[in-house]
Length: 205
Ligand SMILES: *[C@@H]1O[C@H](CO)[C@@H](O)[C@H](O)[C@H]1NC(C)=O
Ligand SMILES: *[C@@H]1O[C@H](CO)[C@@H](O)[C@H](O)[C@H]1NC(C)=O
Ligand SMILES: *[C@@H]1O[C@H](CO)[C@@H](O)[C@H](O)[C@H]1NC(C)=O
Ligand SMILES: *[C@@H]1O[C@H](CO)[C@@H](O)[C@H](O)[C@H]1NC(C)=O
Image (cartoon, rainbow, N blue to C red):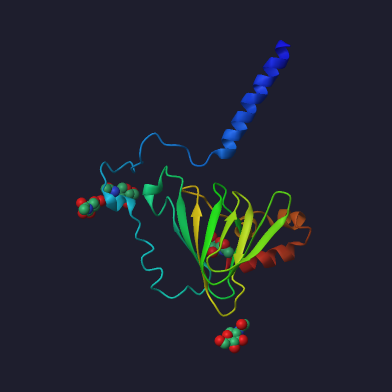
């Protein structure tokens, strides 16, 4: 009986720990906000990010572009578990498959239409064609992409993240644009070294 109770207790502790991990975002802070180490006092300027001011005044970039307001660009986000990005898609452009290891992404399409999709851990693909005004959530850590299939019209989306530093792992970049050996990649993708080198060459440019 006592052993049974202990086991139950251990299981309860273990599942509470797992639940806690599943719910965790950035670590909680024990003050209202965090200042960079070399700063002692701030005013409203510290909590203001002006790096997006010109984004709607200049022409849409010739290729897909993500402009971020995350911890690196906007230090006041430290400890606040939020960040932002503006995604600009010229006609026909793609944001290739990637993941954000530390956050879900909540995308809000404000211009054009956009084909989006993600793949879950069972390899099921979930896709949708978004219209202006639609929101779509990419679950945390899952591989996803966005594609503006309209060959005549740009698309623009705002993406919010539940981490000050969601991180981006590009699938093409991580797999084919680092120093993983051609042999390992050829075996992994069940192809030959020449094919791997061809893919690598296209990404390195
Ligand atoms: C604090 O350090 C950062 C990064 O090194 C620098 O950009 C910033 O100007 C510094 N701020 C002050 C008030 O010294
Ligand atoms: C706020 O602080 C910045 C320096 O970080 C300073 O340049 C600016 O003048 C201050 N603004 C006000 C209203 O005091
Ligand atoms: C783009 O728009 C022009 C007219 O504005 C139309 O003639 C053309 O077929 C369109 N192309 C595509 C790929 O939709
Ligand atoms: C591949 O890596 C090079 C060098 O780091 C970089 O300039 C290039 O943009 C990368 N290409 C892609 C598609 O990530």
